[in-house]
Amino acid sequence: MLAIDTNVVVRYLTGDHPEQSLRARQIIDGQAVFVATTVLLEVEWVLRSARGYRPERLAAALAAFGGLPTVTLEDPARIAAALEGIVNGLDFADALHLAAARDCEAFVTFDRAFTKAAAGRGPVEVRTA
Image 1 (cartoon, one colour):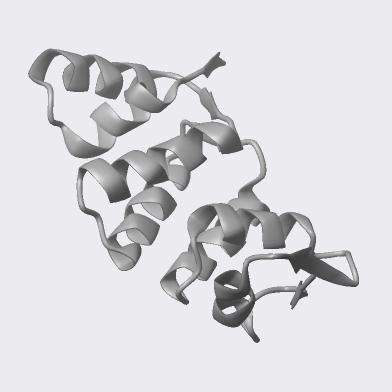
Image 2 (cartoon, one colour; image 1 turned 135 degrees about the vertical axis):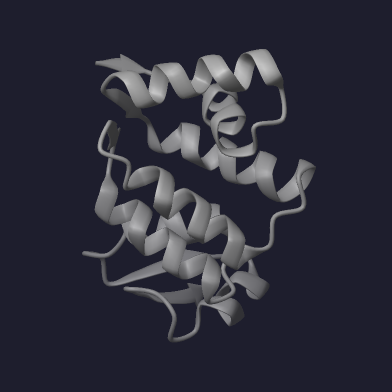
């Protein structure tokens, strides 16, 4: 199994570079690959910031990618919860934090916008410190 970087996933999903996108497809479609949660965090940022993907499109693209038979995600349940979170108005990084804190009493932050956005949307209550 190969671990792959953000740029390989982005090329695979966007097809924006003829040579590199082809190579990314050969790698990902041709063998088992491992994708770290941090790589998906970067992929989400690139697709949203540089490519203009909206939350629904992001969630669909990352879910489809994670569902490929050759792809092993570091923490599939956490990723699935975070993708649901972005569709429900949360930032992907914040949704990942919440998914990781699912067994905690609450998640505490100084970010009031996060507290408001997360109200009733996560596996754990978000409180403002």
